[in-house]
Each structure stands twice: as C-alpha cells, then as structure tokens.
Amino acid sequence: MALLVVGAVAFDSIRTPHGKVENVLGGAATYFSVAASRFAPVRVVAAVGEDFGEEQLRVFQDRGVDTTGLERVPGKTFRWSGEYLGDMNEARTLETHLNVFERFSPKIPSSYLDSEFLFLGNIDPVLQLHVRRQLPKARLAALDSMNYWIRGKLAELKKTLAEVDVLVINETEARMLSGNFNLKKAVEVMQKMGPRIVVIKRGEHGVTLFSDSGIFSAPAFPLDEVHDPTGAGDTFAGGFMGHLAKAGDLSDANLRRAVIYGSVMASYAVEEFGLARLLRLTPEEIEARYREFKNLTHFDA
Amino acid sequence: MALLVVGAVAFDSIRTPHGKVENVLGGAATYFSVAASRFAPVRVVAAVGEDFGEEQLRVFQDRGVDTTGLERVPGKTFRWSGEYLGDMNEARTLETHLNVFERFSPKIPSSYLDSEFLFLGNIDPVLQLHVRRQLPKARLAALDSMNYWIRGKLAELKKTLAEVDVLVINETEARMLSGNFNLKKAVEVMQKMGPRIVVIKRGEHGVTLFSDSGIFSAPAFPLDEVHDPTGAGDTFAGGFMGHLAKAGDLSDANLRRAVIYGSVMASYAVEEFGLARLLRLTPEEIEARYREFKNLTHFDA
Image: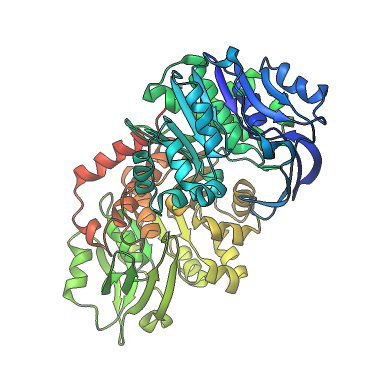
C-alpha cells in the first residue's frame, strides 16, 4: 500500500568523533524514504532548491520513490550542520539555513491522494494538519515532532495530534510534551491528545511501543561503532511505517515486527555517515539483522 | 546450591518525590539476600552494630538466610541517607556514616566454605579478593563495584576482577572502568580484565548481558510509579545469582532467564520504599511478572 511522507530534504554537514562529511544529502523525508522504500511504495512531499540535482534525485528514483511531490523552488535547499560529541546521544547544531524550507507549504499531488499510509515528518504542526486533512481516508496517519514545536506551537501541535493514529517521538520530547517524567504516565497523557499508538524513540536504549494491546520494548542493536547518528530516528520511522504499509496489517504482532524492522534499519544507518550504509543495504542484510534482534531479546518462557 | 554474599548491611534514610523513610533496614547484602533467598539458600557475610536487633535479624532468618557470618561488633551499623530527584535515576547522598563498616574485615565461617556460588558485593576490592580466595572452588564468582573504587583503587580492583567469572556493573561505571563510551567495546575491555560474563545495569533502560554466547538485552519493566530506586541493582543481582544458584545451570538460556528473574525482583523492589514490597512478594507474583516480561519483549521471528 502506498505510503506518503512529508518532511525536510536537506544537505547536511556532520562532524562526529569518527570523521566528517560536507553537504551530503539528508533530511527527515530523505532518510524516511530511503528506509521505507525497502518495504513499500513511497511518495514524498518536500521542497528542494536549485542546488538539488540529478544525483540527489536519483537517490529517490532509484528506489522507486515517487517524486511528483518533490517541489523545486528558487533558492537553496535546507542546510544543516551539526556535531556529535562524547556518547553521541545528541547533536549540537552548528548552523541551520532553512532556505527554501522557510516558506515550505506542502502541496499534495492529486496522484498521492489515495495514499493509505501517511507519515507527517517533523515540520510545523500547522502544515502537518493541512496535509493530514487532505488525506482523510488514510488508514494510518503517523506524526513526528520535536522540542522546537512543543515549546513554540503547543496548541497547534495538540490540534494536529487529535487527528493522527500514531505518535513517534523521542523520550525527552515525550516528557516535555506530556509534562511527565514517568514514561507510562507520559504516554497516557499523549494518548489522550489523540494518537492511540505511541512509539518512544530512546536512542541507544531502543524503542518502546505503546498500544491498546499493551507495551512492547525493543533494545537498540549493540554496535561496535556508531559513526553518525544523523537520521536514525527518521530511518526507524521509515522502516516502521514501511513494514506496516507493506503488509497493511495493523495487528499488535505486526506492529511489533514493524518496530524491529525500524530498529534494524536505524542500526544500519548509524554505521556510516549520512545515507551511505542504507544505500547499499541488501535484503539479506535486513533479514539477517532481524534474526539477530530475535537472538538479542529471546528468552525461554 | 548455596550462594554466599558479602557486602553492606545498613540503615537507610531515603527521600524521593513520593515520600520518605528513616532508618529502614537496607544495604546491598540485605537487598541481595532478600531477593536471592526466593530462589536458593543464601549465606550472608556482613558486619552490623549494636543497633541491629531481633527485628532486623528476622528479616534474614524468616527467609532462611544463614546469618552465621553476620558479625555483630561494638558501635553502630552503617548508615546512609540520600534523596532522589526528577527522573530518580541517581541518588544524591546526603550523609554516609560508615560506623562498623569502616573496619569491616569479612570473616568467612567454615560452614560457608563449600558455597558454590559467590557474590562479592560492592566493597573494597582488597576485601573482595580476600573473600574470593577463601572460596577457590566456587563454581561461579560474581562481583559488583562502583565509581568510588574505580577512582580510588583501580589496581586492586583489576587484581580482583582477574579472579571472578561475572562482573555486574552500572552502565556509567562500565564506561569509567573501561575508558570506553561504546558499550560493546567497554565490555570487551572489561572481559580482558577477567570476567567472561558482564552484566550491565542500565536502570530504567534495563539490563544487557554479555557472554561467550553473545548478547542478551532485557528492558526494565515499565512501571506507573517508581517510589524508591534504592537497592534496585542489588535486588537485580540477588534475583540473577539466586536463579543461577537454584538451577546450577550456567547455560546461555539459563543466564538469560536469570537476567529476567533479576529484573522481575528489581521491578518489584522499586514499587515501594526500602524492602517493603520485596518482603511480601509471593511466588505467584514473581512468575506473573516473568510472563509479563515475556509479553513485553516477544515478537514473531
């Protein structure tokens, strides 16, 4: 089933203890699309500038991502630069140039309107709601957000949350949004805002899924080296939503599998800078790490 | 099989956002004994003062804990007071009075010398080694330590680590001891120091077990309220070692089960202040939460 993602496409400059890259293709919608397209047909809505060329376009098109909604506008593509220090759990933003993203107003091509799965990447909640309402019949609408919107546009964010099924959010931001330190209570508060499914991203500590059917907790995959955590959360979301859209199965058992596929994709993403590892990932590697996750968490009843 | 624990018995005064208690029985050896005695016969070695009375002794003896090695010496029992703020991941120590613990020199009763399982609680590594060497034939010797000894007695700690099979340690302290942020690398470094099995306690993020057979990651049990985290790590160690001593089975499958039993015990311990919840825990409750852990982590292959 078709999966629509709206969000940022960017050029990133990233420094970590393992090295640095300059102006590599990134952005939430990019990581999401590259990950999700391994599982289901993806349609992307984003704005890019005149510096977005054939090479970048091919990253999407080579994976069958529908780029009808990739709007090219005068000016430069969104640019972000940041660095990770120490345990690399959080990026320190060095520079942000919104460029064409500043006046981004997502336009949904008519050919996208039958998308059954929808992912509202981390953009202004007013725009997220605008997109959500153009796809009233989507079977599953999910949303990501961040501290910037929780602090600056809380009322708008709550209005948008009321109309989505799934919230995918970082642990720290869940606490901020809910005003609760305790994660179970934080999730109860957020579920009352709208989404019946809440997925808490905990970085190196994994992911916890809360739904009507209970709680499912998955660890992060233990890696020898995390080279670059950029895009890990969006890659997770891509694997998670991609797997759901592939099967169209929203059962608890399949939500759990989707969490693992999301975790598999994120675990590969951080092994190298930018999209590099994801772009040459094989189907066999995806399945192999899925099995490794099973071995990592299994114990006898 | 008999399980010997050496460590602190204390009176704790604890303040958390949920309330406070004064001078309640605590200490690593106490939490460990209470938890482990649900699974296997426990023998305790510790020093207590003249303020340690019948009521406290009964906590051990009612659970069949052998208190031959509980040495009563002139003076007061070790006292600790601390408070937990915010997310309660770390205690702020308000006062420490070592009292009789200051000159603690563990004496192993001859009736303990055939103990097959040994847990060296978090005390001076010189004393840990002294105990370890008195039980050369123990099938499994485990050790806990902390930042205080890593900073102050690193050479002694390394000497002790060379003679144990299992290291049970907090995530932060694992990084400190190994000089590595990356957990897999940290564990490799620590395994080279001696222990072939390393158990990383990650607080609200659960526990990760590293052994020859690979890695096993268990989440913490999601609770509505954590009332008092005091003793959670020692309770985990008690459940973990207790289960191993019960079955005497050191297979990977049984180590994994032991991690879950330890996590079950710790999850109950933090529900109420001090030992309160552990003391009235039923066998049915232990098994019920074990099954809940299965449901929390299970996904289809």
